[in-house]
Image (cartoon, rainbow, N blue to C red; front, top):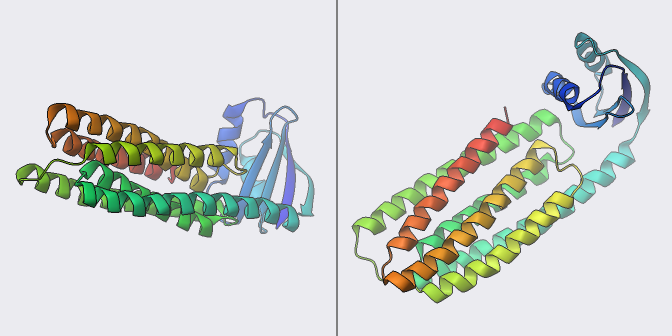
Length: 264
């Protein structure tokens, strides 16, 4: 891994940073970009093609020039190792709660818990494929984020079919106490995952942003299932559970669309 430092004399604010990011997005050999706007410096971590990178930067007419280029394989490896540990931690938490919520969802007949469990499964899938993205190029990370978005849409479609089936059929009331207790535990777990991801290095990369979007959605979903449990008990009806289940899948689709937009 090489680290090439550019002096960008006209880089005064995040606008120039965004221009440079968009310009370099298609370069497959780039693993990471580090911007030091106050000192007008850009560090590019890459696997060669320095001439191509330099040419693209010069085309922006921001006064870019190479200061130095050095081998930083160990530095990059340390950061990648931390990302892997973070992703492994949240992967374990999400898959464990997928199992818990899927099991309790079927036992308690709660569509809200089943929906949230499928969302947890999707998150586990996201974290799993993100592990393969660590240390890869920006282009690879965006492809993986795109795959995660499509996977979410497929799960949401399956969920909508089940919600419709339950609306049309005769289903017994869900166990509201199980819904509330399990959702509170899942809320705590997701809040912990979000905290871990926000503190991680490389959190601005596409695959890490995808992970944070999914986890943010989960926090909202957990609150929704808790409210649904209270309404099931208050109204003595399974409709609040089904409505929240449907809303969960809308949130899942919105998150998937954000991921697809991020991966462009």
